[in-house]
Length: 253
Image (cartoon, rainbow, N blue to C red; front, side, top):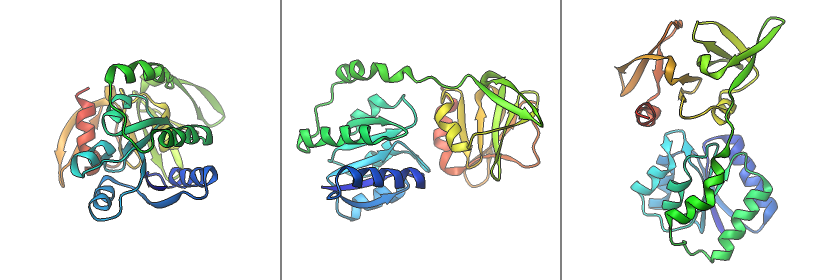
């Protein structure tokens, strides 16, 4: 069996490769790709795998865009930190949907499902999938954070957060009154515990709350510039170019 992995987080990609090999050392991993662009190019020019293991949220957008740009007629096991993509996943050749972090058990179950199907794409039935996956939406997003200033530690409710910003290896929670607090989370980890209805990662080092945004302006190189309510930084707040389209969709609700 040949598998192609599509995952933009290096550690997550390495973990999936390790779990695949532990499950069955004979499985051939053709490669590990990080973006929509790379994957589309592979599918247009190189050998197609028997199975795709694909993260939904990539560095340059949602992986569903791949199916609009390349002909894909092979089964896909989707992985994601969020729960709100299940139905769309099954409309795009998905045979299973794994919530991160991927475990040995969940991956083994998905590959077993692929084998049981003998590589045939199942007929998509939205009502059936919604019934099957209605329990998946029970994810509990964080409603508060433990923050600290010096020796003092206290709770901050997520509704009072304006944004999160990384400065080297330190991540700060910035509240709506422009107070900054150190928290013990990476930006990547925050993406998996915050409600994506309210929070969006605009670039490599910053996540914003929808209620904290005051103004959105066009910026050079097809990017966007944000102004936050009551918040001032020493640098401009820019939505990176590869995230602009997803940001616009998120902003519209």
